Amino acid sequence: MSLKEDLITELESTRREYHLLVESVPEATYRSPSANPAWSIGDVLYHITLGPPAVRVEIWIILHAGWLFSTLLNNRTAGIFNWGNALFARHPKHIAPASLTQAYDRGHAGLLASLRKMREDDLSKSIKYPEAFVGELAGVVTVERLLRYIRGHFEVHAGQIRGRLG
Image (cartoon, rainbow, N blue to C red; front, side, top):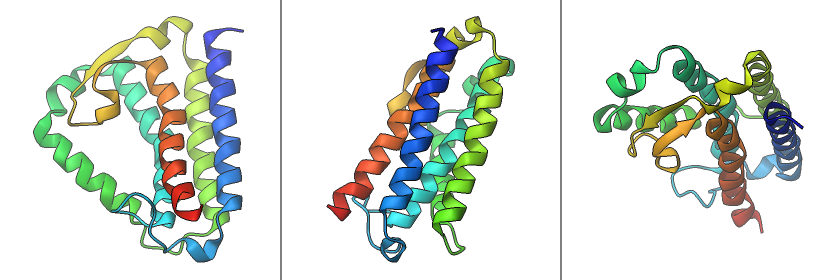
């Protein structure tokens, strides 16, 4: 199995697990607090859907405009990113299971389309992430590491939901 095929398998598995998570969470609990003190369970479910499209943009930047990271991403702009992330996670509309899975699937499909167009050597291209931007990705980040981050991101937030639901 090639590295690209391995990554596709991991991303597909994460998508299926997201669907199972959404199916397992009663919609009546969406407004309940999650184990993340800033967000409700619904906020966390919605936030997870933002991962694939965000990673897709970050991969594009690594492959085509790496200078943006060193120029635009620093401790000051990280504060703006984190503020926006928190704002977007508090989705103002009614969140329903179908809209969550549809949003995740759209981002997932776009990310897979980008991955399928890449050459194997693109997966080793990298950029240095500032620690303040995304702490879990601080340091040198390859395209492969970003793609694998989707799974880790999901697992952290799924744990925050499961921790509250028992």
